[in-house]
Structures are given as C-alpha cells and as structure tokens.
Length: 619
Image 1 (cartoon, rainbow, N blue to C red):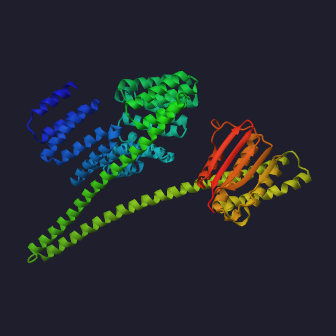
Image 2: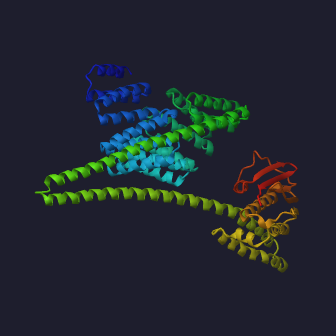
C-alpha cells in the first residue's frame, strides 16, 4: 500500500503520454494483487481516462477489461462488468488482437457463469479455448477447461464434468504450470467426484492437493476450501468423524481472517451440528450465515441461508415469508440482469457487423480505384487483383458458413438431449408404474413354488408364467410408448379398473370397494387423462398393499362441477407426510397429476390414508 501510493503520486507528475497510462495500469495491478479493489478501480479509471483522451485504442481496451474485473466482484454489478468486457472485446477485435480477445472472452464466460447463464458461458469459453488450443497457451487452456467442468457440473452432467477436470489435471501435470495449478486441478476433480458420491477417490485427490508444502503461503483460500471439502467427506463416510468440526472451524477462521465469503462454510457447519443434535450451536451458525449473506448483499446466499434456518423449526413462518419475498426479488433482478446482458451483446454485435460491412465497402472501393488507375496498361495485373478479391470473399463466406453450421450443430445437439431426457423419464415412469407392479404381483404368486411342488400347485402357477410373456411384450411396447395407450383405446375404462382390482384380489386377502359415477360418459374422456388416472390408482394400491397393513381399500369416481374426483382410501397404519422419503412412486403420482392439471391431496394418520385426485374436465 505504502509504495503503491508513492508510485501513483510520482506518476501523476509525469507528462501525459502512453507510458504514463502503462504505469498507472501497473500500479492498479499491485492494488488488485493485495485486494484493495477501491484503489484498483481508481488507478484504472485514471489510466482509462488518459487512454481515451490520447485515442490509444489498445490501452482503452485494457482499461475496460480491468473495470470488468472490478465490477465482476460485485454481485449486483455484473451487468456493468459485462458491458465493459464487451467494449474491451470490440476494441481487441478491431485491432485483430486475437490473444487479448480470447482472454476477454474467457472473462466474459466466467462472469456469465457467476450469474447462472451457463449456456452463453459455455459458448464464450469454447470461443476462447479454440485460440488457446491453437496457440499452445496451456495456462489459459487449463482455466478454460476448468470452467467447462464447472459448467457441466452445474448442469448435472457429472460424467462430462469429471472428464473435463481429468483433462485439466493432465494439462497441469504435463505442461509445467506449477504445483499450485496442479493443486487447484486436484481440488476441482475431487469436488466433481464428491458430487458423484465417489468419496474415497475424491478424498485421495484432496489429500494429493494438500501435499503441496507451500499451499498455505501461496493460496490460503484454496487451502481453506480443501479443509472444508475433506470435512464433508469425513461427515458422510464417518472415516474421520472426530475431525469434522475441527476442519470446518479451521476453514472458517481462515476465511474470517481474510474477510472473504464464509456463508457456505457456516451453513455446512450448522448442518453438521444439526445432524449431530447440537441444535443450539447449529442454529447459531445458521444465523451467522444469514448475517454475512445480508452483509455481503448476495441474494442467492441469503436464499441458501434462509433455507438452512428453516430446518431448525425456529421462527419458521418468518423465515418462510422472507424466503418467498427474496425469491420474487431475485427472479425480477435476474430477469433484468439477463435482459441488460442481451442488450449489451446485441449492441456490440451491431458494431462488429457495421465494421465488417465497412471493410467490405473499402475493399470494393479499393478494387474499383485500382481498376480505374491502371486499366490502360496493367490488364493482367487487374485480372490478378480481381481473382484475389474473389478468393478473399469466398474465404469470408466460407468462414460465415462454418460458423452457421457450428451454431446449428449446437442447437441440434441441445434439442436432441432434451428429447432424449424426456424419453428416459417417460420410460422410467412407465416401467415403474406398470412393469414393476406386474412383476411384483407375479413374483408373489410364483413364490409358492418354493414351498409346494405338487401338481395342483404347479397347475395354479402356470397362468402366471404366461403373465411373464405379457410383461415381456409390455416392455417392448413401452419402448415405443404403445402399451397402456392401446389398451385404454380398445377397452372400457371401468373394465380396466375392475381387471386391476381382480388381479390384486387374486394375490391377497384385501377387500376392495369400487364405486363408479354411472352418469359420467368415460368414452368422451381424453385417452391421456385415462392413462394417468389408471397409473395413479395402480401406484396407490400397490403402495397400500406393500406398506400400510390395510385390509380394505375403497375407490370411488364422482363427477360434478366440471371436475372428476377420484378418492382412494385405505384403513392401514398411515405414514407421516413430512418424514416419508419421496421415492419414485410418490414422484410419479405428483408428476402424473401435474400432466393432467389435477389437484392431489394426501392425508394420512394412524387410522389410514386418504388420497384425493381432482381433475378438471370440460366435455
């Protein structure tokens, strides 16, 4: 601080020229390195002002890049950071400074990832990576690969994330990037493996990162993060359970002393205390997390802190109210921020297009001028210039076509992934709701063969072996989304429900009561609605038979006020709604209800469970 201030004072007395601007940028760099962001901004603005005045385009671009770095550190100013980065990129583009342009694109990508715009962040990262790879810029290539790994992790593409991080480790180890870069790569890879619950492998990489003896001196923040990551593994695996609290607190003390973000650490520590029944300590840390989130004015951290506090059931209603207000505010702010970013990019692209248009016009004018001046004596030369001009135009057109093809390939890949994911979810639901239930029923009926092998028993079991063939056919049909839809279209819905009840009666002592609304015309009901109602009933009955201990299940269908109400009741032991794990069954019930705009109400106590499904019907 002392010598940087002295240097700034000396520079202010020097005559205004390009060297003075460069010196100001050197001082601003010193302030950045010691974390004095206010002075960093001040020195950068001095340099940028002189650069604009002197029309030093390269130094103007550098100043805008620096100001982007400053505003990126303020969560509420990241749209301003994006605007400065775009100005810097535009200048470097006009100067044909590809290295600097690639570095700014990487900064833009990091800024976009911080605000959750992962799609555009990936695009800018790939732009930058293309240059770094060609120029053998291993340091920036390493950072770009790490960012792609982070983006894949945020998109829950775990395999891709691990692949990128392993590539980053390979780059760091084989290109002399230094032990600190290796430590960072090991930590990043360990984090991805931890997210996949590969605890042993993740712990090995974290410990490998900690082996760097100068880590605490060169990057104490990374050191604190490693302590926290190891504490998470110890808590999950109970390997070093006695050290969990010690590691969290040690990490917290480091962050506190550095005056950096400690919200997530306090949330982790509070959750540890809560799980170990140290509720007072846990609640205290949860409150501290909310305090620092508010102090740092970071909305997303406030949301995480409030969610954590709600788990302690103290002032729960107040925190829920605060959380709802915060969600609304963040949604509006995020929308405004993304709109601002889109507007900035649009304006930047317009300038680039105008420049390209001007270049083409200048080239055309140059060609015409040369033609007029030398037409009388240099016909061969003119023809040569024309040929060269056409080649340049063809190259530009080819480059544009290549970019358009690349964009279309990315769009096609994205649409393919969306369709593939929807199809996987559909098959999973149909397998769970149909095939698994039928297999369970068949297994129960064939189980008797393990105790009796007489002729009469075998003859009774033969129809269930044929049932397995039907199940095989249904699996094939599910792959083409044909099974239940065909059945519903060909059969009366009441008959399908009665068949389902009869199958369950044949394998259990359960008593079933079924009541249909005789005035309701089932043939006019949409096939999709019938399918989802059937699957919901199938899942509820199966759950009741497996877990409730009930001996009676009642099922009723009533139509009134443009709504069909399906009530399914049992007299079992019930379950606690706030404690039951939401497995595939309950998720599928809620999903199917949502697909047909139905309202699902579940009530359960020691006297039984009542499930009501209300479907809006407009015949």
